[in-house]
Image 1 (cartoon, rainbow, N blue to C red):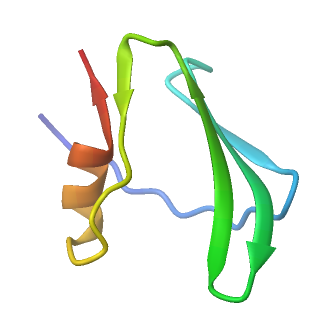
Image 2: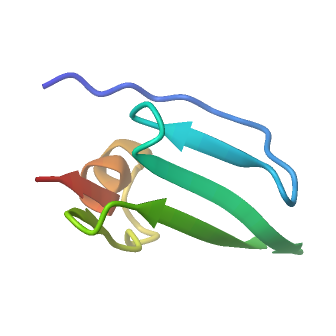
Length: 67
């Protein structure tokens, strides 16, 4: 399995689409260093908040699991 890492500059009200629209992440609010994100995905896709102490690749592996 290969991992792809992308960085996006996204403002409040903007969204990114993952896997041809199967997953959409929208920035709802931004305050200081915290952001409120809305993740919309099929109920078959497991979505969890990843731990802050893990690196980005580990967060990606554990944050969104496609079954």
